Image (cartoon, rainbow, N blue to C red; front, side, top):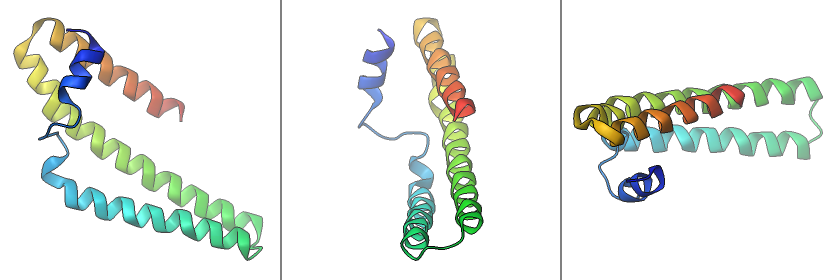
Length: 107
């Protein structure tokens, strides 16, 4: 099974690693959405640049924190299950997780 096939086999079909905490994640994302809307209002209202940058930093940190929580759940659920299974599935999940970590570090 290729990584794409593995992803397709698991996407859209729960439970995912985050499923147990889905309500908490959605609450957190709504808060982040509010922060992004706040940024729009700040620009509309011609708020001082440094104040907007401070809010950008807070929003970025909130997204990073969400991403790390999601990554931890992915490692504990999806990758751990693949390790138990072993073989190519394990290798694909580890490679997939490493690529996700790499993207997070570059952002």
